[in-house]
Length: 189
Image 1 (cartoon, one colour):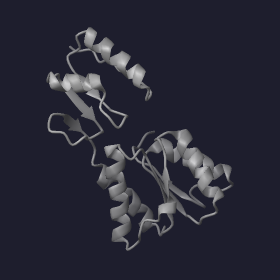
Image 2 (cartoon, one colour):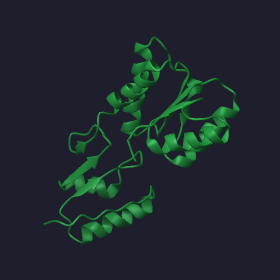
Image 3 (cartoon, rainbow, N blue to C red):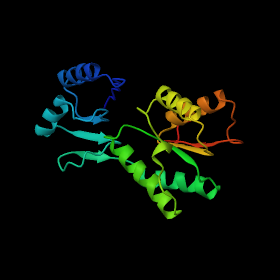
């Protein structure tokens, strides 16, 4: 008997503020919220203080006053990197998201655990920074390929970045999976 209202701020803080104000004005019963900035939106902080029904989705902020629902990001990344390692890959590029996302922190931990268990060490020049978007991963991968470093696989910490990397790899004349294996995290269609 409830209506679900979906709002996508597309990482625009002003749009997020406007959506939150409108939702609160319309006396909503609760919010399922996925933060995208390093700091919690002041409107959300106020809702937390007021004990408004609020759940954080896919981001853990290590606070006792917030309910959070996440996947096991560390284990998922560990399984992805282990899969690539079991295929024989040893030169794996990792494309990670913003360093303040709990998803990035946990997926990076899983990536590192997989390397450690395979007696490999993380190479800083094989880790690319992205903002989680297709475009950013595409540009970072093109730039990486231009540096002429040897690699055989890419693990992207989300599927959009994996697709961006795939486009860059193919644009540079390589083929997936014949020349480069690519795996992403999220399992979008």
